[in-house]
Length: 190
Figure 1 (cartoon, rainbow, N blue to C red):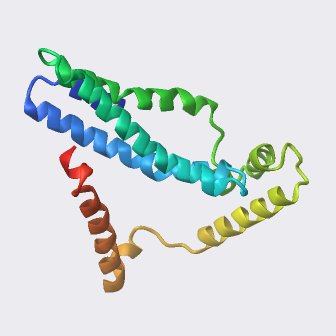
Figure 2 (figure 1 turned 135 degrees about the vertical axis):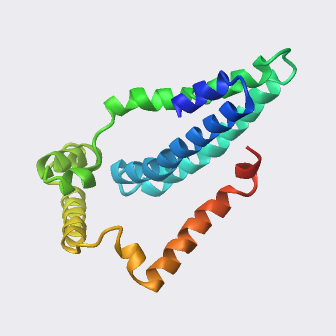
């Protein structure tokens, strides 16, 4: 998203602008898909619903902020009226890039990679108030471990999406749902 924002802000022709929008669109998929999952894993179970809903709410707050920034630059002379908002859209991605170094790993990912002690330590820190014997930590760790063991034992891959007519139909529906939800409303205009 940083690369896309810089390319968009420095665009010299329409094709360059379109390529930048495509790059930003590809990058935003990762933020939309993986951020709420990590937030859900790290949030304490009592606060999980509120914290994960704040993530979605923040999208609308940022959209309002972006609209006001664009409104503020609307009257500027020259190209800077659209270049400033285009360049500023890279700012959240820069914060994310810096923040990655301060974020803990996903406990589920650690368990899947056989790093159970690290996963338990993260759950202890965020869910058990640094008490490794906390009941919530034990239950969540066992649940995560059980689900991951089941997933790893069930050897399915991407190929299974294409092997049966039912799976192909479901895959097409999922792709169309994602595509058409982005091709309407604000997603279409922006």
